[in-house]
Length: 242
Image 1 (cartoon, rainbow, N blue to C red):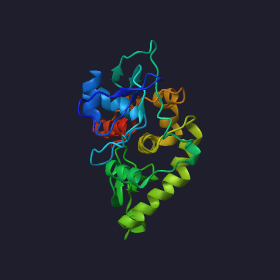
Image 2 (cartoon, rainbow, N blue to C red):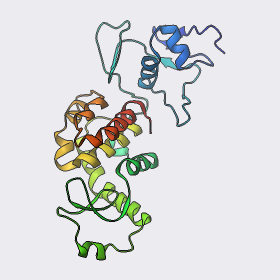
Image 3 (cartoon, rainbow, N blue to C red):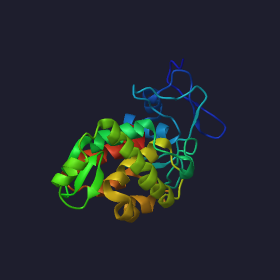
Image 4 (cartoon, rainbow, N blue to C red):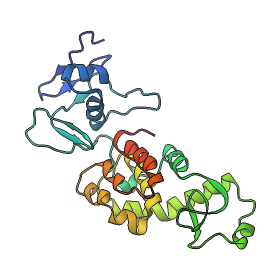
């Protein structure tokens, strides 16, 4: 264990975790806030599961220079500000597909309705945000989709993702992503559209420059009811919180 909370520093000047170290011990030793400490650990490839348990391992090296991590700014030894990609977990987008956690996250944000309904734009929709046509629901729609089930909705969602959304995302994103970043983008792009919204977003433009700043997704905040969803997508992209 690490009873005194004093992390070891190696010959590279980076901190090395000892057995029992965690966010609290890192924050105490460095003097950073808990949020800043967590942000730095996540930027160094540490993950956190649904129970709040970190994957931090004994002997893991943590770079603690200067970071700009979304809204968390930490000043350390380095003289220049930089964005630190999670290189240990990021892969080329051509190798990624939405995870089951990502699918569950998207369904929770989008909702699942097993009969035709009018979305916020007044367009006929069914299942998990599947557009039927750009006009209101008709009696013919109700007859055509009678007996549509949740299982049907899931299958239709997977078809939409695999045939429309994911190929477009892979074509547009030019930098490697971790699984949580990719899943967050799938939800974001599914909501704002991959034909116009996502390609024109400042988030994508900055991401392709190497700036991994999920808070830029918050610029897409209409209607006002979408803000809660957008904040969840930012948390997923920045911190891996599903």
